Length: 345
Image 1 (cartoon, rainbow, N blue to C red):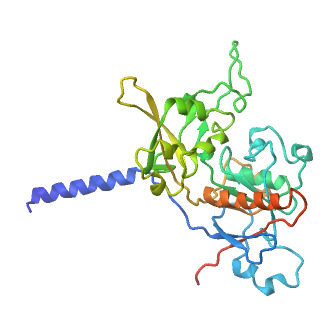
Image 2 (image 1 turned 30 degrees about the vertical axis):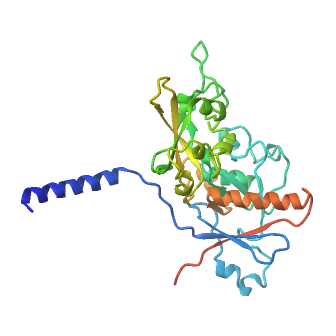
Image 3 (image 1 turned 120 degrees about the vertical axis):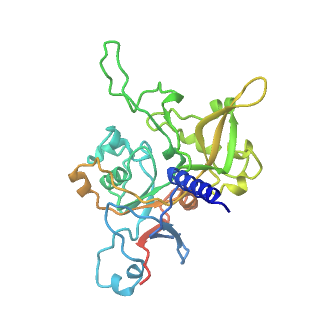
């Protein structure tokens, strides 16, 4: 091998390394918490792994929580233990209405449902506002913990702005206006939110227009989109319009994201098709919101954990099943307990 060929190979290797550093890949973290889910009449809990937060109270360790010494001689209950899972108010499914200034949960009148969240852990989808603001709202509602879960909707947002009047004055309607267009959408990020190598589809423009909506205020993404972007049947558009037959086997999450990119097919009609690719469904860390005031940061004292989209779907199915078995009444509820996983000594 000549010196010149060796130099060329080293240069090529450096370019490959540099290009890999310029791509921001999706990153998962170690799930350092567990959620024990105890169903009515079932002696052994179902255990979910979860990731933790940089805010709120710490979880008791799993070994301490299950030792007889930690539970005897005290009437106090550790944070995150013995809670009833619940859902947000019906008019605030993302627990972001306080962030938008639509309501305040510091006042009892802010909770439109009037539902009690005493001794509850609220399950809330990711998206539309920060993790810590969701936790703050959950605590103001009276909850004892919050479980934030992944969502396709959280990968989209709108370039929100206030509309202006003819005289140039501005309206306070950035989160309520109904005239946003597809050009206002912030689309998911390649390799960070999705990976086309794990599954790719091209959705016809007429199907995209008739079935999907990404311009609903305040977050952009219409939750009805989930019906067409999740699952392993042809109800999932990414399965129906997959570039090849490997989508179901290659896309572990069984979920896809519209990337915002489109192509024109090779036919004479020049139809536009919208690219959709396999979504990542990883554990993430719940980081702090640096825009909160010092007093708001101090106010957040409940524990917060994160579970994936798949885990949340299974958990919510359990909740719905127990509710149906109870006839929506006052039967025995699901009880959950959150712990920090024991670390190797």
